[in-house]
Length: 115
Image (cartoon, rainbow, N blue to C red; front, side, top):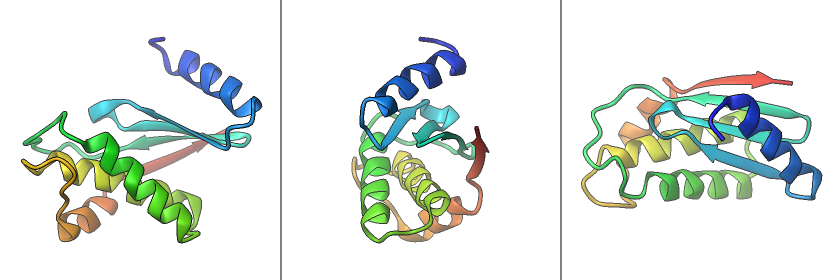
C-alpha cells in the first residue's frame, strides 16, 4: 500500500471487524489514525532526529495508551501521542523523552479530521 486512500481503505476494513482504533505510522510524515467513521491525518513538525528509528513508534503508542486511559479528548490524545514519538526521535536513547520538549512539540502537531 502506498497511497493514503489505500491505507485508509485497509484500516476501515480492520475497524469494520471490531478494532476501535487503527494507527498507521508514516514515519517523519506523521500518522493516519482511524476511529469510528472518522480518520485523522496527524502531521508532525520537522525536527533534527538524533535516533529516527529507535523507539519513536513505541513512544507514540505509550503516549496514546496513557492518554486513552486518562480519558482525554481524542484529538488531544493524538497530539500527545505524536509529540511523544517525535520527542523520542530527538533522544539518543530509545524510549526516552524530555517532557518539556514533548509539550512544546504538542503545540506544533497538526490534526486534520476527515470523514
